[in-house]
Length: 397
Ligand code: BJ8
Image 1: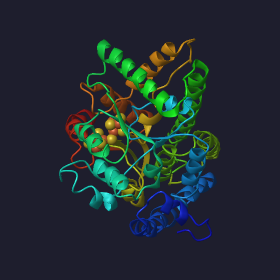
Image 2: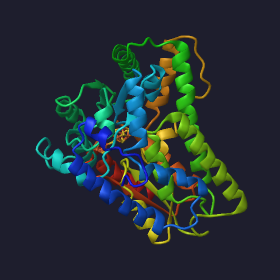
Image 3: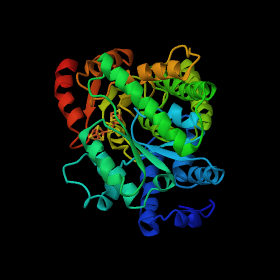
Image 4: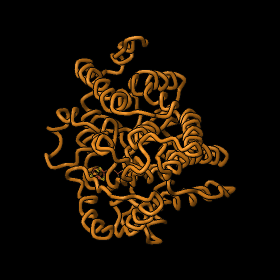
């Protein structure tokens, strides 16, 4: 895997990575990637080469950038949910890294710590961390958890035996005014915690420019999704998913540039009528739990049958970028926190009750993307999404 690339072994050893297990993972990943992404697809956009390159060196260059930043005094903060505001982390000159677990390769390391009937994402994510397989996890100075589903809530207690963990309390009934007030308090507490960890004081200017930067990344992603409304679809669902998965942990400035280039190319393809999948292919919307790297299986199955996944109503899809700030007005940190609370509470995760907004989102997306079918996708043992899928199926039909 390190062929033609710098020798990353000294870095991985320094991070305490379990080299044998890590070698096993990195021996399999390129094979799977080639089969799913390279061999099975035609007419990919040229700019997608950047994302192929990133996967080809998945635990190398970006990890070495984080290492360098840490040597310069920056902190690395790991997160597991869209509800933890990246803006605050970057405003305090720290680096946010979305951690993941999209394969049960790592489950052996968490099986003694968790019951069997726990969501696959939690088993996998925890396994990557405590099994010392993930260098991003190893890099983190702090993990920020959140109180979304029960599994995650309890998982932070387990994880705190291995890493410093701070838990942000996200509300359960997000539409209530008191929930918003509580979430605002939680954002303020998070700021206090991160100011301590980073030894940096948050200022209005820093927060505003971090909001602008992270919003820019989201708006570039939105452009990619807009282009997917065309027939023929200019990018496969698989490639769009990969873009989103990598946006969680890559440098936001680079992502703004590269996703922007991809969006430029896709907009041109739409004008020229160029597709990654044949015109007239059945158009599928996928909705449900997040798909962390290397979870590409639903997309692979659908797209090797000649259909196209044109949109994902997931946290590795529209939920990542859908809610917007609008005009970023405000002269105080409190003003900006209010904007942040509204932006974040607009995300419709199944962990909230009620959660009518998600149904409305799906029905709207079906029309906007002219979908022929919807796949309601839920990881085993994710009760919030499993329960919602029953009502959603009826509404969609
Ligand atoms: S905003 S979807 S990232 S909580 S799949 S761990 S919910 S049992 S990941 Fe999520 Fe934030 Fe919501 Fe998005 Fe629990 Fe379900 Fe597992 Fe989940």
